[in-house]
Image 1: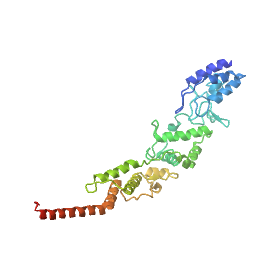
Image 2 (image 1 turned 180 degrees about the vertical axis):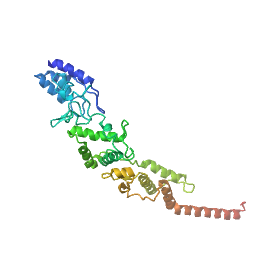
Image 3 (image 1 turned 120 degrees about the vertical axis):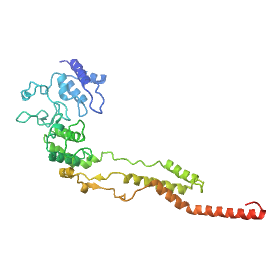
Image 4 (image 1 turned 60 degrees about the horizontal axis):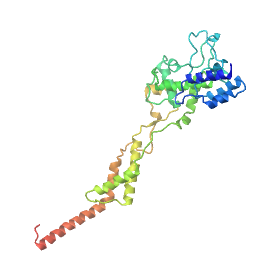
Length: 336
């Protein structure tokens, strides 16, 4: 086969592949074509194409590229190791066709001719018919690994619905087993449990968004201006005092409304089934469990406290003015 014919086959191959989730479609630009044409041999062009178009984020495998050059080493349906298959070679979770690691092929079979690694759908079929105790034990380990969140599944029951949280979590475990060439998924699961803290570092925690300071300061200003007794602008220190308190109390109120965290890592299937997770519940120590924080009420209380003396002076002044008015009226003979 000529390099030109290989390039035509390669273009057809790339155009036939759908991009992986979150990835842009593969394209063969003119620069790549020129690079392939400049290679001294077909084998050199094949190796160059493998470097350019394969990888963990590519739907194209080295076997695909060799097949485009009619040099594929990928097992075919006529291979006697796969006589028990009647349609096509299966797809495996998380890896491309013809995948191998450290010399272990994804198509490796046991003495009965069954594949050792995990095919598409294994995340459902492996566990669906297991008793509740076994299901709960696996769910507990998925929770301990950080792959499965509490409250998103029914303990002891394995969902076979597409994209169910427990099957998606288990799929991640099986994908790693395939990628590492270890057909014992419990080793993959243990890796996720042991590295749970590292994984959590990349999770997005619920974010607290504090009130805008300028908006809060304007609220304080309006509070002073609209007060029937004061009717003035607040002093700078009054704005800072009340705005800072409102913002701080708003954060406390937000924290007090957050659900308690669950300390995962050693939850058991029995605890999941019984619902007794008391030893794993962690409360925020900065928030009192008995207090109900009302930021607005707290700010109004402080407002009344810091303006109390001023209000009393205004009230006394009004009383004096009324008394003086009465005296003046009595002297001038004006009607009361």
